[in-house]
Image 1 (cartoon, rainbow, N blue to C red):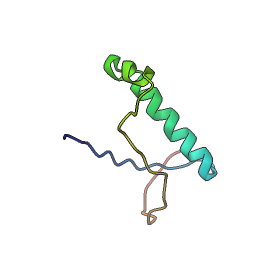
Image 2 (cartoon, one colour):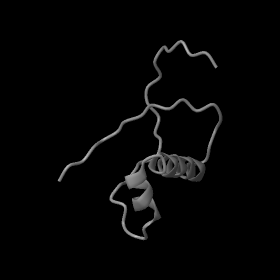
Image 3 (spheres, rainbow, N blue to C red):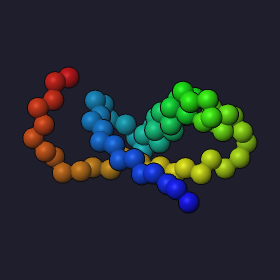
Image 4 (spheres, helix red, strand yellow):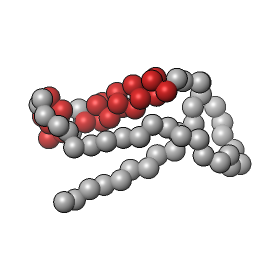
Length: 68
């Protein structure tokens, strides 16, 4: 079985509840799946999608020079 692991760092510009973060992550995954024709077909099917995702979690603060 082939699998991939994607690790993403996110800087939030506003506070979100735990439920809001899950909703936003799942909407982003759905949006990305609709960009590819094969994934778009899979997205429409009423089957188990074989992907999972975790919620956001804090990491140690680093000195980033961030312009907002």
